[in-house]
Image 1 (cartoon, helix red, strand yellow):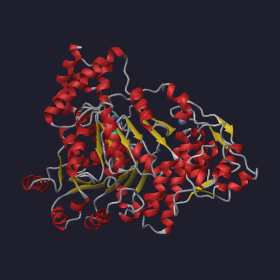
Image 2 (cartoon, protein in one colour):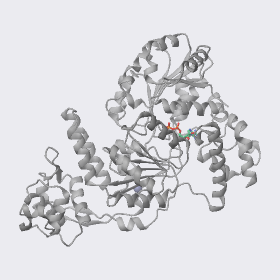
Image 3 (cartoon, helix red, strand yellow):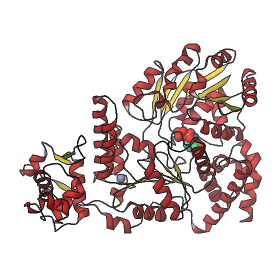
Image 4 (cartoon, protein in one colour):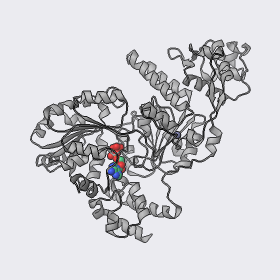
Length: 597
Ligand code: ADP
Ligand code: ZN
């Protein structure tokens, strides 16, 4: 058996490489540079961990988040890998010990922050060490176009100038072409071979619905799909995060807030609980999540629409890293679009950047409004064709009805026109429904011919019409003024009957009633007790050792134990995810749980 296969089996307990891993490992082991693009959960870490161990010297890993570095290193140490980290959160003695081990050549892997990686004292110290490779994790942080831009990453090319012969590997899950080109440029990775795997995350189910009563909608989803399981709930603003965490707690969820307005202590504490306990729901702004490698996040829910398809993909990608079924759930509405447009109108970015953001937002709304397969639309956005409908998204599970909507569109557009292109959706819907509120009376809009023409439909249906008109570019939101709706040149094609308007029927009532077939980690009832018993044991051990439970074994390793029922240590060694060191440390303990069941 080759050395890398031996490491894979002995240290990590896996029998074979996945996807492009083997090619990347071979290339880097033989000294080549690489850019690795794999979706979250694709198994990027092995791509540098195994070469670092296989090659002589220490692998230097640049990783952006100190909090997570510690967990990654802890997980490696538990597998018997000589890994360590240097960061500003450590005390002097700890750092000195790590430096000594590094200089003696005792480390396989050293994790550092980008700030540390470019300090001159640190670089000088590296001169006297042997480096096996340099890995740059979350490499999109180097790009201005990425969403997690970190200025320190810009200096990382310095590492290469100091150590030109050491192979480098940059890794990211961010897909788009400008970011990719930017990474290669800024890291001066001119000779790097590119390893790009597909972006599909087949284990993630996509469920998207228009926002009505978002609290009820979310709770129905949570209780029917993932009760008691860990997840992330994203909101657009800090205030909404605090409110959502509040009502979720009232509903009995273990919900914690996370946003940039909290002290770093509070954030740290909540993150820690999310990682170390089971079933915590993190309610957060987008500030939360970069590099979160908790494998058993069972759902990611968006209570507000994200600002782009890239952001949506990145955020939902945090669900189901372990490959087990997970859900990406979202409720969206035109108010979300307004909120995002308002943020954009306040930004100081140059006009072309703002135009780009605007286009990205339009694409996101279009994704929400599609009647096609979500996964096909999502992947097409990243240049990938999925030949058939996926069967695992809301529009595949419950096909959407398309009805003729031209007359409704004409009513809505003429209502905008006749009220002077100044009003928001709420006002316009009231006019259409013939609700003569004082504002409407003062403006004299209760005397318009459009007043009350829409009484046949409900307020909800009219909101949907306006949303879909916006998604189709048939109305635009005036962000320089007060967010009123305006006509666009294309609107006139509909108004004059030159263009028809198919309307997607929001199948809300129907969808809420039916339960999805693809359920999360579900094992047959007889076996679920055993799975729970293994999980309890894992949590007990994790508490004793003060580590996240998944550092001991991942959920899929426990599920594999339930399925194969090992009775001896030899059989236990065959379970995926049980390497030599973990076998020695935990094998007997888990065998006993299996035996007593
Ligand atoms: P990424 O960093 O790309 O998001 P990770 O490196 O965290 O992904 O790996 C995701 C999950 O897949 C982890 O649970 C990891 O243990 C598992 N994994 C990685 N490679 C393999 C493999 N060859 N066989 C089985 N499981 C693997
Ligand atoms: Zn689908």
